[in-house]
Length: 174
Image 1 (cartoon, rainbow, N blue to C red):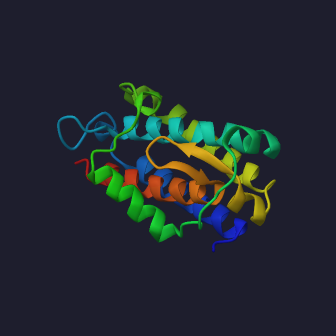
Image 2 (spheres, rainbow, N blue to C red):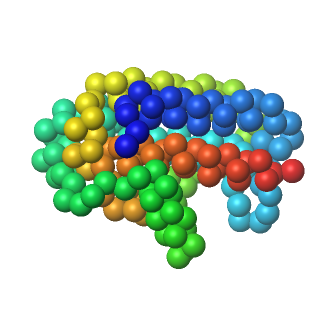
């Protein structure tokens, strides 16, 4: 299983790859999507921020509050590959972002501020994770809107993969 420092490195790398790509992407593509009904780069970035912000809030709560509210895991923990396979399956079955995570139209003028907010959310996440231990991230669960209750470790795996998933969507905008 991936250790907390490895997960922190994975999170940092995933977020930074998105940031670097968006910074280099031509400005005229920021508001475009690759097909009708798909999100633009700005909307993808807003969705990623909306997705990680509640995780950041949860990670700084006292662990006993999370245990009381959501409980502990009663199953074997999924590996990174198992989690990403499950997520892809749920998407193929029609799983979509739920309303709190659906972005609004994002104009180019917000690009720099959005990138700054996204980077700040990454820094909060990596820092918050440092206050956890290996046992707790495999025991305590929190809800995911499509995947159900995940351990904190699984939630971190999801967050890493989720960034790469949206980076691929951003790369397809031309």
